[in-house]
Image (cartoon, rainbow, N blue to C red; front, side, top):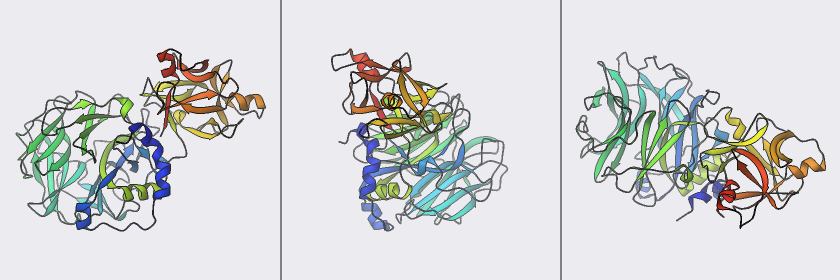
Length: 464
């Protein structure tokens, strides 16, 4: 099995493998395809909303847990009608192998707006988006939230599933369609006796699973049904609440390589822009366990995500089309929710998410004193670099001197606590390594015989 800790570095490698003219899959080849990658769609928000962008963003992954934002974490599709913005995007492979993209029609956080429409795009391979339109799903004075879709083989149609407060109750509604252009009349799909939000459907040959947020207690639950008929899930809840409070937007996807499922949830208060993950080896049972922050990464500021499996060729072509970021983020080994950042011109590690989020973005350039090493140039303060001064790390402007160049140059070596991660050895004090102590960055003398805690403080993952 591939090491999850190495997958973040594969984006650049897969660029070289990509081909130019990837054809659309037919229904026959789509059914037989071997999936070896994933795409995530999302919009962005951050704690103080400086990272808010209500448009379609994409990220790629080989393992479904560690993600590389594409297009510099900038949008790949922006609505041109309705509110001019989107939330809650959803990507699904259709029966002919092409993709449909759906999204809530809402630009911002004015949740009091009522909207009968959702956004829709077609895409052959997620490298371009065509046929933009809005679909009217009902005629009620109610908002239309978080649309998803599923294939109902018994009908030979797709169901478009969404949240709406209609007739005074929060429930899930469905419209049926063959082409995502003309839709049937709306029907109530799921109402278990209390308000629900954010439906996500996972279908298998052995049953169908609907996950949702219970508005009465804030927990995520799963319901199951042998059929996809409206209201057939109402009494089918089979899980205890996965987590309570401040989590919404569940999505469920299966590991491409084994019988393991992942459930993602989205924090909405008090911090925006953080995703959580649980895992289960048997989706038929109530057995979700948390995935630690050490084992997954998320795209920067990602909100209300969607995940769809890809073939290796589709994954590589997607990366080739949109490109990997020119910047990197670096997280701590023993504090895996903490990122290297600058604050008040001091180098430190802080828990993600935070604003300004750009404080944690770095250009790893050729070392100022040794081109075979690296220097850390700030993205939001270009021309300033992390350097040690009296062995304390701070963000200073490059003054062009040899002393500054040496102070700002570090050699990447296998991690002192984990050889699959990275440690950074000082160029001009080769017995000293970059490490955090009381959350501040400094350089200290370290070696393989140093205490385990000190070695962990000096071990980092270079990712996105």
